[in-house]
Image (cartoon, rainbow, N blue to C red; front, side, top):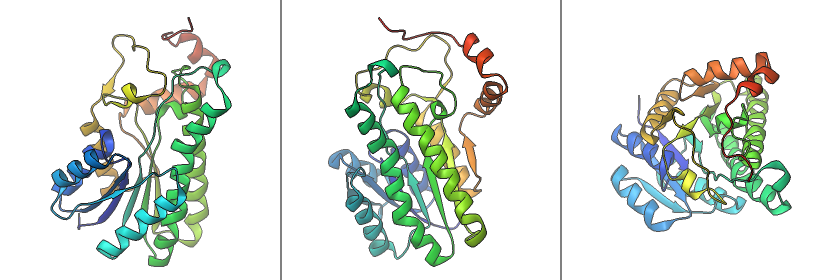
Length: 258
């Protein structure tokens, strides 16, 4: 794959950091964005000699636009933009407060929307580009009811991603839009979720951040509309939509309300 200029939000840890390092090893020019300055700069130093860190809060539109502008000023263009920043929350539907919904929408949906609106016009002007939105299986299958607001925000991201892809397909066929759907990933995401995370039952399949990052690297090499980073999850989604009631009845219970 020819070297590309790739922007990654949420690049200071987890999937974003693993993705930055893998892409850097392949010779790509990486621009990483995150709020945490020292962790981000450390990741960029470990990524490549020309990796560029941009300290930014992607829940602020002006910060997202600054990430785009710094990437173009540094490397002359952007080829791939990965909306990866996100946060979890542990609250069930009847526990949710207004501010909980606002937080999840801001971090998981509006930040990605800002990224889409910032970078897609650049792609349209160039006639090509690749947008990657990192969502979650919980936006498709509600297998963790304690993640209600998080799941809802990711479901909304799924819809915006599909709508954008439909908007672009006729007028800008070389601007590709991809949705990434990881399952459980063994990162600090669960530790950093608002209000903690209940223990998962034994045997729940998980992936490492490096495994998810490798799947996204493959997606960048061969773009597709959607990617389940853990392939068996695609079968789970099909089973869910074939009979929602039966699937939910058979779903194991964990993290139940006290």
